[in-house]
Amino acid sequence: MVSKFILTLGFITACFGQNSYTTTQIHPPPGVPIYGLTWISDDAKTGFGGGLVTSPFMTQCITYQDGLTTALSTPGFQCSAGPATTGIYVMSLSPYPAVSSGSVQIGNVVAYTNGKFNPIPPPPDGITFYLLSSVNKKGQIAATMRCPIASVPGASLPCAYLITVDGTYTRLPDMGGVSSVTGINDAGDAVGYVVPLNGDPYLDIHAVLWPHTGGMTDLTTLTSMKLGAPAGINSKGQIAGSSAYGPGDVPGGPGFFYDAAGNFSPILISGASSVRLTSINDRGEVVGSYRTPAGIGLDYPLYYSNGVSKDLNTAIANLPVDMYLSAVSYINNVGQMVVGAVFSKQPIGAVDNGTQGSQFLLTPSNATVLPLVGSVKNAASHLDGVASSAWIEIKGQNLTQTTRSWSAADFIGNKLPTGLEGVSVTINGVPAYPNYVSPIQVNVLAPDDPATGQVQVQVINSQGASIPFTVAKSEVLPALFNTQGSASSANTPGLVIATHADGRQVAMPSVFGCTAACSPANPGETIVLYGTGFGATKTPVPAGQLVGTPVGLENQVSVTIGGQQAAVNYAGRTSSGLDQLNVVLPSGMQTSSDGSALVVATVKGVKTPDYLYIATTIGQ
Image (cartoon, rainbow, N blue to C red; front, side, top):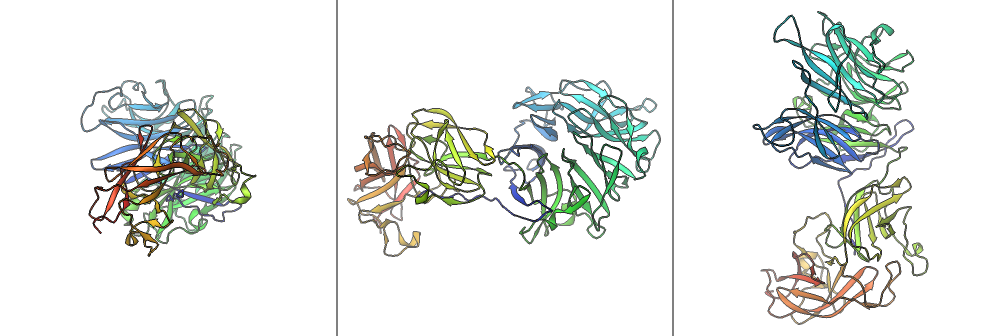
């Protein structure tokens, strides 16, 4: 009786060296059609990025939490996403459409930590923000600023700075001309590039390392390779970057990998005219994109590890025929990648401007990926909440690798299983009873714990336990099983699942696609409704045991059909978590033109949703 939720989530296995990958689509927040995460945590639970709202036309920061993206609320401001790390999201806010009052400083750079906007004190006089590129767990931000040129009034050049979230500004050494910092690791070692005073910004670029101990190391003096801008530096001191830039800020030739021991390796891929790298993790894996002479304006996804480069499109199978993977924006320390995807029907100009059809999270099979819980709802009403001995549906990601329902072999005597395929669930710390598991949904019978109020729900599998999900637990949370389905939203009309006394389904044949076995109900007829969450039974029946004989409910249940009170001849539990109501259809029911009548059941003052109907013969 419990419906199975289907989410737009692809699980695609592919050969990739020794790894296989699953792909999970990252959906944009409502109203943000052009979007992209630029960072994701090592447990893949949280992320940060930006988007573009087209009406009104403005930038918007977006956050990712447990599989869901949300537009970060910044009323009166447009938000431009900067770098992020666990616990710190850096962004710039500018007033839109006009100056707005509030706690956020106007036009300032802020760090979003612990759910609060924390303005970063402004830079020294004459210096302005230009580009925010990276942040570490200490709260040091790698930022390229605009610094005034003393000899040219009103003019400025990019200059490299490290900034702390509390407002300490430290300028990094340079060669008197342009400087830009592009990455920082948790130790405080930063990388970037500099151009000598009066040097050519394309021909005289020097990739550099700024150690946390001070000074500057010119990486270009350590190799004969033509180095360009580094993409980042990991905790081991390994650095990845692109070749020197050409006109139009397009990197030319291969990328580079520096192993921190003085050795450089080119990052090459067959057919590439240029490589642009974006991220390096602590395992030395590098991602980015490349372009070919024939594919002007098209980015192809590049992955590099241990001297080998791959195009992810050759490693991932079963993508839609009109879609291909594009630039990879980030790789975390587990090896999970955030990669864009574009549709082949998109104009090249749109692709070149960064418009993506979708974004995916690629997860290697050897990664430890904890289960994620996104919602906990009553399995019949699909509304948030939990009640003792009621059926609950838990939706999320990475819940298990298999899909199945319980079978007789899972029971020991009359005891319900507390685990299925290695998946278990606790509600308020008490084991629940799963009867269905899949990668994106687990259905459980809640234990008969008397606690009410805010409780925590956790899913545990072989990878570990999910972050506790907080949900309201009530003594009763009545709901009638219906045809609405879990993918429908609240307030969407549905038909209750009901049977005649002889077991035939109460329904219009035309609606259900059934034959003579289906028929509408007559006034005065006794029909059977099925639900869950109606509370305790007169004789206690432990939730963890099969219901051997039907037992009446402890609390009185009332039912109205078509606005008229219906006689309830029986209200009891006939199966684990399944409540049965035998009711008599009243005369004088109000119905719609097709004869359907609204059904509402009430127990202890709590009503079932008021958008469920039953088929009657009135008007037929």
